[in-house]
Image (cartoon, rainbow, N blue to C red; front, side, top):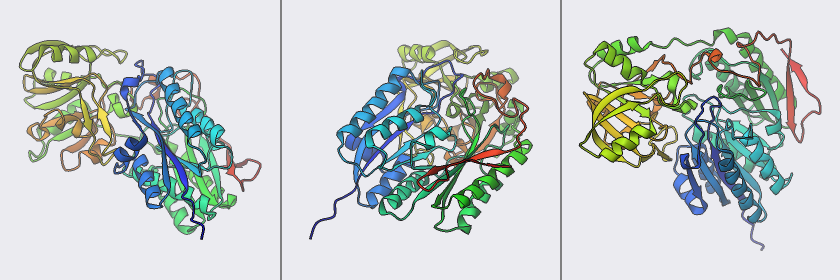
Length: 511
């Protein structure tokens, strides 16, 4: 009897969310890089899309062919030579791997590299050129990915996580792996329907907010009504801080050989989203209102304040001191933890050493219009800033603050970092010896994911602060794209485009 050959599936990750208006480039030192067996071992148990696809493929008994896993915190555009180095290494690894049955990857979907408006499109084209047209490529994206027809022409499966905050990133990886395996088994012939709405919601980005919650419920109900036939529906809310063509909300449905079913699912959601576009709004607390909430809080738990305008997880620099500044202006006797990106101040504090008192001009060095804040404090702790996120978002993955220092500034704890830190995770603070429970509040440079990561640790509150991750899109000089509400666009119809072996040859219009 001839032994059945194990399937060989290449796996990897390229993850960074780019803020095209952030003047600070994302450099090689900002990336965590894993190769070979390290890629598999370090990510097998991670609560990430890569972790989910690794576990699913491993359970299916395939031979995992690791390429490269690289990820950096959101930030400015990736240095061109850095991205090209990663791309070329992935391509070289695929070329050297020999025959492959499939490629299953985690990509963010919103990475800009210098000279390359869509790193994902570029890397997918390069991978397709190596593996050929017959090898399935399946990708699990972030739901803030910028998906366009050119991307869909390069791959077979395009799926995303379905929640924001992203509590289901691992499930996105599992889904990408499951659909790839189903293709290889001949159990499905995927056809994808795609629609793009030229709009950026002015709020209500969380998937528990209305009307987005209803749109996602519509997607789930459509899948439940066609079990085994409608395979996936993903709503891509797109990262808004990118100046690239074709910006907007993308809706994608994958059906098993049934283009009409995929089209109906996409059309229903696209029609409702455009009809309800004025309903996407937020009502965040002002800094003063947030500080008042801290003062009146139940003392059993601190609050965690979302610095909405300076969200590192949206690609902002993390150099704002707006909450600390207002706290001092009001003279409130509250103890807070305040992270700030400031490489020069971090270096000065580290050089001074633990126990020394230093005077710094903190923050405000990257974001246009911000100014430094004069502080004096005693150095409590210094480190290289490396830590492991505890999740549930990206739990188990390595991250870094860069060389950093913790200062006591008249009762305020200031975390001065070289790199913009992923402070949506409590481990960013506890890894530096900061006792969150000993404070009245902690500032997180995050707008959504901090809520699930700080559950049971601190009570979340989103704060309307200034900075480069504001929802006021008039703040940004977009040049390459037009979208509602920046432009008074009227839509008579939205084309639905099809992809896949059983896809109709022409586009159809809905609305």
